[in-house]
Length: 212
Ligand code: Z5A
Image 1 (tube, protein in one colour):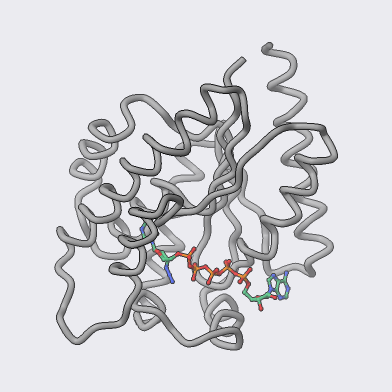
Image 2 (cartoon, protein in one colour; image 1 turned 60 degrees about the vertical axis):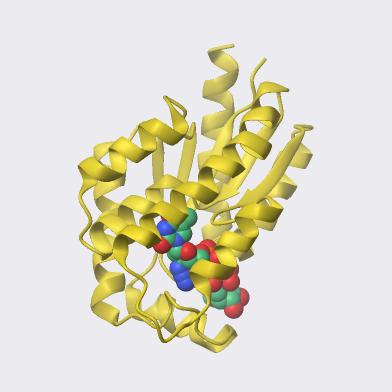
């Protein structure tokens, strides 16, 4: 039986890292074997690509280079980690995936959705996440949380308007694909956010058992 592919998404400081541990605990409690991974990154080569992408630099990174690097890392990650584990029946929990490309490079950088979709097909074939949790907070709150935590990377140096477009991009994806995407109000207390995440996971788990 093939494993399930869960992704977690959202703009800066929504709490993905904080809540991934909670999701791992839930998977463990269900007795499910899983791997947790992230994008950009997830393999030694893809982590090097991540470093290239996130490092602040004086040279302007052109949108096409950024987009292709995202998909280069993803191709490696899919080949080495995501596909083999799903194939072996493990669940894969991934911190960001291609929705982030539609949100950041598409909505944020104004790159064409058609171009992203073409690359998505080349790199992924018909592989898509089974469940995507989109953590949503007002942009100012997310940026405040992120800035309290660490020095800004190259993306975090963008202006508020960029993140507003990214947030709108995520909400549009959720509207277009309500079967797969669950939007969680991540401006609530952590306990409430985790309650909503648990509800979404339980519903998904029950539905996937029914279809087995
Ligand atoms: N990117 C892209 O452009 N295209 C792509 O295709 C992909 C990625 C895949 C790296 O991602 C960058 O890559 C990212 C998009 C781009 N842009 N940036 N920057 P990343 O996921 O590694 O980076 P990130 O978005 O900055 O994630 P993060 O910094 O790790 O944030 P987070 O995981 O969402 O938040 P957190 O660290 O869990 O929480 C932030 C703080 O808020 C922390 O102090 C928590 O304790 C606190 N927190 C969390 N939840 C709460 C609640 N509910 N109440 C109060 N405080 C809270």
